[in-house]
Length: 319
Length: 269
Ligand SMILES: Cc1ncc(C[n+]2csc(CCOP(=O)(O)OP(=O)(O)O)c2C)c(N)n1
Ligand SMILES: [Mg+2]
Image (cartoon, rainbow over all chains, first blue to last red; front, side):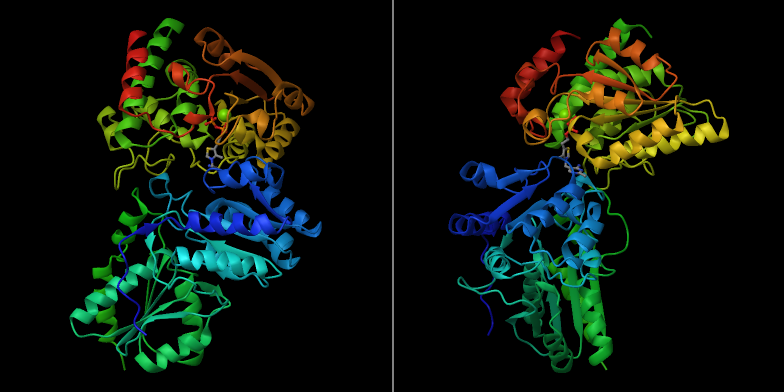
């Protein structure tokens, strides 16, 4: 199945998140939100005006925010803990480990403006370490949807799932790629385009760039497979092994450090089960210079044209 | 420098800040305006610093813990000679060293990187403790936001500073009564600060943090214990329509608002 070329309309996935959250919260009074002075950045103004008593604002105190989330879950509620991804994970990492993952608390951690969405605010506000930090934690699914359709589906899924979840959202506009009505399945990649020359794998804000790169490659007669792999943990090993066998080379791209993220998770499967040449694109192990997210992604070799070039270089390395 | 001169410099910094926020289309103007009088007093009167030797081991230390008002710090540093004043025009531009939060590896005069709230005070406690251990004579100042004081790390550091007897440390709380999304009192109200700091063993001075005549003596005061200045300020101070509303944490004035603000700030120059 070859998905249609991305439509140009761009969506802020936070809108899909709050739309589903509010719909579910209207039916399920156990749903509460927890924030760190982040009502606006999490787009929870509507939730707050509908259910002011169900929005728990602990103030600028992320460690307490995550701990309070665990306590609310213990009390029978289903907390959606929403804050800037950089602070939600980095600042509260031990709370995420001990109170949420190790305790297996039914808390939904919603990382807002992940990756380099905060652009010019700089490396303190970039969340390009969060896959690495969270995907090592048992019990905690790590999910980065690629568009508003998948975001809505993942929120729906998370609310139905009895256990902790880390959902990594951006604020940077992305086109819809998945069909309306798409259902999210944990640990299952989506085949967006088939091909046999190379497989391009991404999630979050990079998937649509991969689709554009595949268009560029197709124009040169190179057919690339494109997989959207929102779930970083548990990783879809079957899709990875099939990609390695069928196409003989895998290129990954992510709005994350090139160390420890999606590409690394895929490489762990590849070296173990189906060794083929790989290229990992991401933030190259540096604190990013000043610039917007889109600027920095281009700067780090993740424009569609640069991805296509990397793919061609990778194909030349195939055994 | 006398209070009158300091006030004039503060007004120039405010004006430049407003212009730079509008030019960049981003910034944290409310918290910049509330802090500028104190930044001016620090850099043009109180801190013993040499822009030619920004790493002089004996320099006084200043940590801007509320790093989101980096722009106000950049302008102050530029005016004081730490960087070219023209460079302010590069604020937030691709590859500029003037990021949305200060970077000590790129910008002379910045002591440590801030941006995540609740980091500056623990680092400042370390700086003051180092001076105590080495016998260095420098004084350490750190400025936090009032909302920022909700971070638990601050209270851990406050307890340590008292335990260590850091009489060489001054914490300035920019008490503008607002945080990002709401008033402090409607979020997690820490006010009054005085009793809390005193309970931890600090000496506390309360001042009008936008009045130079009160700022200077408070900063120059030397206590026998760690000293906290609760600076009662106005978020957006100097621009009438910004004061006492939650809207101006990081909003950017539109063309009409810019003209009004420009006129108000220029009037007092
Ligand atoms: C750890 C952390 N959490 C959240 C933020 C996002 N944030 C930036 S400024 C701000 C509000 C700060 O309020 P306050 O300390 O009162 O600063 P001021 O009013 O002086 O601007 C928030 C929540 C952050 N920078 N760091
Ligand atoms: Mg404040």
